[in-house]
Image (spheres, helix red, strand yellow):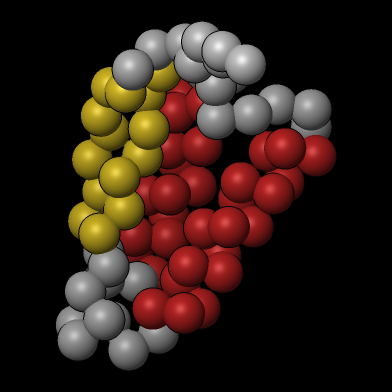
Length: 74
């Protein structure tokens, strides 16, 4: 079977476990953002995924120590 994945953008999250002792809690909250988004019938391939969720990720970044970038994937 062949599947063509469209070109899309992704959040690349970098949490240093040594700098952020609550990294497990942070990952859980990031997963919850994705889960809530998928409950709306959307996916990471939705063209507005980054715009729809970037404010939420930035809010978590204020609470936890991590870095993120947005990269294009094929």
